[in-house]
Amino acid sequence: MIQLIAIARRDFTAYLNSFSFYVLTAFFLGVTGYFFWSGLSYFSLISFQVATNPEAQVKGLNLTEGVLSPFLSNMTVLMLLLIPILTMRAFSEEKRLGTLELLFSYPISDLQIVIGKFLSLLGLFAVFVFPTISYFYLGGVVSAQFETPTLLSGYGGLFVVGASFISLSMFISSLTEHQAVSAGIGFVILLFFWILGWMAEWVSPALGTILRELSLVEHFYDLSRGVLDTKDIAFFVLFILFFLFASLCSLEVRTWKR
Amino acid sequence: MISVQNVSKSFGSVKALDRVSFEVARGEVVGLLGPNGAGKTTMLRLITGFFPPTEGKILIDGVDLLHSKPLLRKKIGYLAEHNPLYEDMTTKDFLSHVAVLKRVPFRKRKQSISAVIERCKIGPVLNRLIGKLSKGYKQRIGLAQALLGEPELLILDEPTSGLDPKQIIEIRTLIQTLGRERTVLLSTHILPEVRLTCQRILILNEARLVASVAAPDVAPQSPGAQEFRVTLRGSWDQGDEFLRFVPGVSEVRLERDGGAERDYLIVAEHGKEIQSELARRILFSGFELLTLKPVEWNLEEIFMNVVTSEVEQ
Image 1 (cartoon, each protein chain N blue to C red):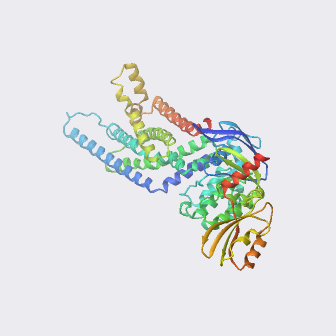
Image 2 (image 1 turned 90 degrees about the vertical axis):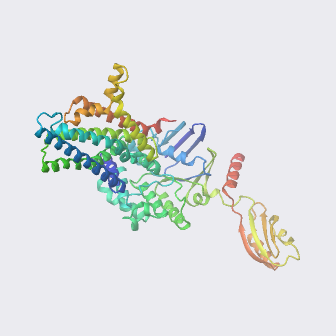
Image 3 (image 1 turned 135 degrees about the horizontal axis):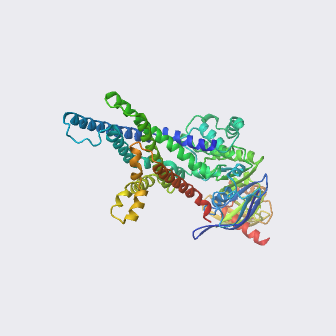
């Protein structure tokens, strides 16, 4: 256990000491800040119209549907791009430098390496994402009052989605020693899983159901509104476990090849 | 301690090792010598359990490292090829990190880290980033991480490659002292290195183990017939016949004729000592003796010699 924490801590501090992490965080916070501001302004504009004209349409006229849900969705689209960049170093860098071989010579298991790295990335993701909660409280100062439980479950959902992005990108990183390749392929595959549901419209109903069930966006929709459905959570947990296992296999494959 | 039994390793169609067998006893310092691409690194990686052999078996104290619990890897300290290190960490942080990974007990951790720091003389660079250090220091940090946890077996892949002569001597001295307490298996393509540090030399060539010899037997000079290179200056009116009359000389070859200065290769008869007599006669004949040195063999010639003598035996 202590070895696992040591691996997680090393990677975590290595990222925190790197310039690129701050560039990425600044970019993320800047863009999400803009998303939040534009979402809130649009919401207040609609509210104003409804107040002055009682016959205007009132769809989405609550803070969860009107601000939180679109904001979280926008944030996940941004994560689609940024998480592969955040994660690309995980194994690629160690492969390139040869330090992975050093790790393999130590009395630690491959599983400890995989979980340690996953935890470090989860920690970084938290550093990345949780400051954005402050927007809602800043929003509260202006006019809107957000419900804390809805907010927390929305962010819980976001965190689970982020964890599944990390798990998949980490697996891609374990396949190559080139960071750019890892980020590129990670992005394409995440995007594929994201939009899988769109294809459901064009294929047979049976296949369509399967595609919809595999699509990340379908499972995220309820979570983004603060609704925690066990089916969605189970999907993401399985997704995470599957790709962690794939990363483990990717490390262990060296011991299979004779 | 190490038992390599009929091991082969192929990468696709390339055979990196071909039916290699040897044993290393506890406390022995053994050098794995061979030209680049002979399969040294593959052999060491197999021993650390990095990947499995295509055929054969490798046992460390009777245990197969690859298919046993990772905990058993505590036995080995490994300095990998090109000495990979986390260059974004300071020396101190790196060593503490490795101490945890190598399961050094909490109470002993501080003490073990200071012990390897002292041993590898890396005290002055403890708080500096590894990436900013000289190659010599990096190499010592590589050795320090291998030594942490007091492994019984040290596996060092080219421990002196890329170092300057002073650093090479320092690292060699360090390996010599380490060899007094534990089993060491090191690889190199530099002959003097194994002669100075090892008790036994395994020679790998083109994926095969061609010889296993005690280090002192691999002399840098050709055994039997000794050869000397001499440079003389003087007047050559009387010719060079006097060289041939030195007792024990079997052959004299003119290698360079630079007017007054000439280089000769002089071959002695089997087992004859000729240096002192040769020098005396040269000076007696009125020549200046500019150089007189035994001819050192290069690695290929040693290979040939070792291989042929193995066949003769």
